[in-house]
Length: 329
Image (cartoon, rainbow, N blue to C red):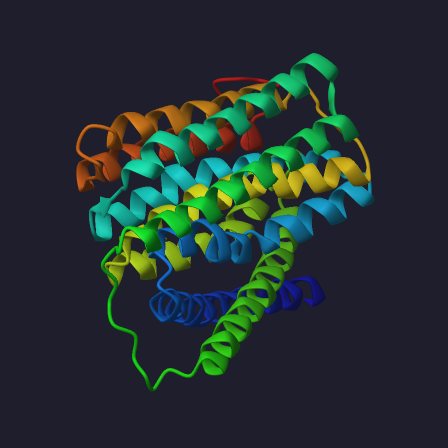
């Protein structure tokens, strides 16, 4: 009876987490978009930096905490699982809601940069058997280079007199900042509640740490990206929808794993090779779908959803039957 009541409580907490995430993401996107208009900053830059960093906060909290506690499988699987989910599931859903226009800078720099970071994660892990402090510092150097690139992109956009929507004079800057901060806080709180509840529910089924990290925890920590990108797509803020995911994936590897590895080296087990390869391949698929027409169409979104369905089915087979699945770590 106590166990049944506990499960009911976890489902209630799960619902509360969803509500916090949805409303928090709505406020966060509104605040970020209006700040962009106020300062003449392209929405793409806002999506690739502020929104991406804010929605990566749950991954950072989970992975850094897991690394400190020695839960190496959770630290890596959370990031890799989130990155796969971000592209295939979240961008797939967002593009089905509204086809996503993708700028040239995203196609020719941002997506390849995430691809590079994903390849380095795979190489560091397979060659060294761990993500060490030197690897973490390399990730941080790449992150700093990317931030300087974003600053240069902002200055270039302003110098070229790029068209922006007129800012509403009634939107006071302090109110917008408060909206972003409150929305971000709700996103992080909602993710924490959701992940804790989902992990407790999953534990009842005896799933191992890697599979929990790749599925339940990855889904929970990716909920901000899911809600933020889908709401942005619904509002036709396509630069934020795409930039949020690309930037978030980059922050997940360079900042989250980079910081975790600098704090304490993270063991990279052979079980993660398959998942890391998938994370690399999804960036190739994304680039192939958008580079010709500079748009992620509904058809492309459906293809990505089918691909994620196949990947998730493999994980489910591993959970139900450790000897099953396309790959048996």
